[in-house]
Amino acid sequence: MRLANTTWPKVENYFNENDMVIFAVGSIESHGRHMPLGTDTLIPDRILELIEEKNNIMIAPTIPFGACQSLSDFPGTIDIGLDLLYDLLTAVMNELYKHGARKFLILNGHGGNIKTIDRVALDFEKKGAMVVELNWWLMAWDLNPAWKGGHGGGEETAGVMGVDPSLVDMSEIEGPLVLKDISENLKATGFTSISYKGVTINIPRSTTNVTDNGWIGDDHPTTATEAWGKEMLQTTADYIVDFIEEFKKVELKSTK
Ligand SMILES: [Zn+2]
Image (cartoon, rainbow, N blue to C red; front, side, top):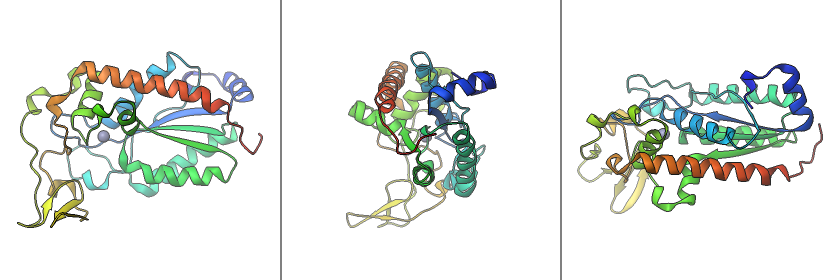
């Protein structure tokens, strides 16, 4: 059930009988030369479509933008920042709360959004609501450890292929991952991490100073397949459908 496609009397009826709503939060950001900028939004949107096939939960419109400061030097990346993301989530959820939502499921596509969603979740807990944070790519690791992957690596590339293989630029997918070390002995190992004498230290840098390509991870994007992506998105969606039924049984302290 799509909020944007539904009349207000029907939405009123829904919230008279239900207190659950789901929406996705993504990001528009570089995921490597081979990946579309909307990766973190496209994948949750597809999972929502798969959920919609099996469950009548109210689906509010996706928030396509997220917080991705370190990636914002890559062409096309749009970082709305932590403060605006917090204010936007708060405003949207306050309105849904006013209409009767108490159980919020946030299907998140981007690691940089997690701390802000955590903050909003704790705010809404104080109002008698409960926020479930569904970080799809982390859930997928638990559903099948073989799917574990990094930013724009095999896992996310497979996810996009599961949405639409034509969205991946196969002409750009080859080539080794090259990270820019800070010095001969301070070796870059990730977005912000470096290794010195076997110990990991965080040195936050703009990602363009860490890699020219934009994807980071141990799972090379060439390992991705459409079949992997389709199975991963379906399995994740099915898990969420099952979770929704279990979550319905939870009684919150406050009543509407
Ligand atoms: Zn991503």
